[in-house]
Image 1 (cartoon, rainbow, N blue to C red):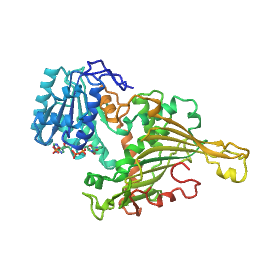
Image 2 (cartoon, rainbow, N blue to C red; image 1 turned 90 degrees about the vertical axis):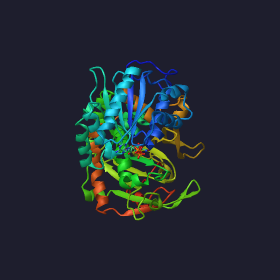
Image 3 (cartoon, rainbow, N blue to C red; image 1 turned 30 degrees about the vertical axis):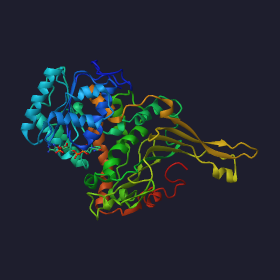
Image 4 (tube, helix red, strand yellow; image 1 turned 120 degrees about the horizontal axis):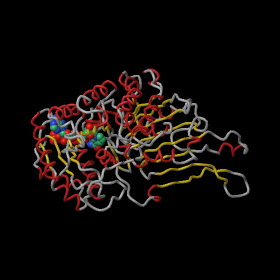
Length: 507
Ligand SMILES: NC(=O)c1ccc[n+]([C@@H]2O[C@H](COP(=O)([O-])OP(=O)(O)OC[C@H]3O[C@@H](n4cnc5c(N)ncnc54)[C@H](OP(=O)(O)O)[C@@H]3O)[C@@H](O)[C@H]2O)c1
């Protein structure tokens, strides 16, 4: 999917097949923050050690903390202590601009540093500006870049792209507002909205599984599939981000973005081409086919929950309301389960169940396709009851892989059938370590491949689907159920499937 222009490498041959990106300066707004130090700098260190960064490359950090260049370089080295010598060499030339984003002087100083880097390193005027800062500052930064002329490429052959972190708005109206604010300064083709799930190899492998194999696609529809379930479970709580989570909640934090992206890839029609246009056109068509319920209908097809004190890995953990930065009377949801319907030819009548939660027993992201029972049961009585329908499980994390659950005869005289599993494990099949999601996405932004980034119409449609559920929560039309940390969520979540012969997961 990448189409890198050639550039010189800093180190060994690429490990994960990423070609060296073209000359660039990556400007990280929010360089002193959690995302930059915990994810972005280590991802860059990973790219450096794979030889996927060009020789003519630099990072410029911009934030309020009054660091010097040397202090920022030290942070970069500490963020990836095991990194290669190529990272040490690279980090030794990083630059830092201390300043407030609403101050025009910050951008004047930034422009000076960028010009310096272009002169000294031959970075060719190519920029990726990464908004790893608070969402309230997204539009301010884009305006600041535009006011100092940094939003436009400096020549016909150079590029200026803006990578935008989540959350992209907190509902449809705010997402549309943010979009028009960013488009004052950048064109859609230069806006790269991150959903780090899209950078995961296993999420991309959904495409390979579906469209590179003749065996799956013919059964990937309402004639064969009885129900679809998507689970994103986390065993962690809110950690040190209680204040942030209070304003987000599970619906905004996980369902509107990551789960909608996974659903779209799993259920969309085959694209004509595997590129930014082909994939994103099909994803948005699928999202448009997901029924947008009324607020009343939404309230009847969703469960919201919040964890109370419990036990994870045999250790006691506090309840959500006791976490730092959380209101002791908070009604923010840490768990959501919902039923969706896809109104199109392929999926009409197939319920799609989605659930996510914090402080669940394990970290797990998976898609389960549950197939219809066989049309005629040649084996009667108990045998027939024991026979489970086939399930195909796409495991995205951890232990990424694919499992097919099917019936096999138990050896012996009596004709008895038991469900057995056929497993494919990524780790076993491919020895090479795979690129981390942020490595992949940073690299794609530099080579200008938008395939794994989210287009404006996808974001908007995902909010259209989620907004009625948010409204139902806000109107208190959905009771807040509780669940002890370390359990699989409120019991009410099972009731979403009442009348069906299955519950969550694989029988
Ligand atoms: N952290 C994660 O794991 C994670 C995961 C997914 C997405 N995200 C998204 O990534 C973004 C950053 O999150 P974060 O957790 O890294 O936030 P954070 O730790 O609060 O960092 C915010 C950064 O922005 C800078 N900043 C904020 N307002 C500024 C202003 N007016 N002028 C100049 N600098 C300003 C801060 O600078 P100073 O501290 O120096 O003042 C800091 O460097 C958010 O959009 C978040 O939703 C984060």
